[in-house]
Amino acid sequence: MKRIDELKLEIMQDPENAEFTERGWEPIFEAPPTAKILIASQAPGIKAQESNKTFFDVSGNLLREWLGVDEELFYNSGLFGIVPMDYYFPGKGKHGDLPPRKEFADKWNPKVIEAMPQLELKILIGAYAQKFYLGKEMKRNLTETVRNYEEYLPEYFPVVHPSPLNIGWRRKNPWFEETVVPDLQTRVHKILFENN
Image 1 (spheres, rainbow, N blue to C red):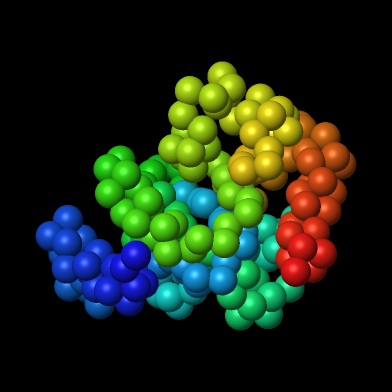
Image 2 (tube, rainbow, N blue to C red; image 1 turned 180 degrees about the horizontal axis):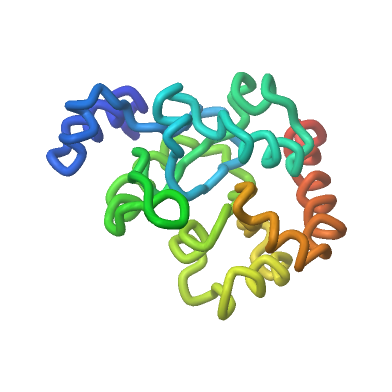
């Protein structure tokens, strides 16, 4: 098993990431060996890239609310791994950030996740992460996948992205915050506080 600092260097030296390394950007992910919960997401936003801290924004605030944890626990406990589908900000598109590069996760995510042998739950945020981890097991769309989240337990827990852009989806699907989020909080707390 490679150490994370070695992997990080390998990622930065990859010619496919040369433009980011030249800008002084580091790959954004968290993979403490003690992690019990994986946050599998899309790609860092520009704020995350500039601060070198993932989910350090409005989306992160809502995500932590859904998980029922504070910033201290999320960032400093060593209990959360955060592994996006691309470790660099992909740029701006017409409707939000551009999607993660297609081959990036295939190349790097298995190596990074291998460094976290104690993972008990993988929270899959958004369609990109769900397609990568669930493959053909994913339902016809994100809404149906999230609605049927119990089918993927105990390993995976699919959720919608906590982006402010998804407020319309959340209004149309009140069941998510009424039933799915409380179950997510219960499972997260059980792993973090009761299974030790």
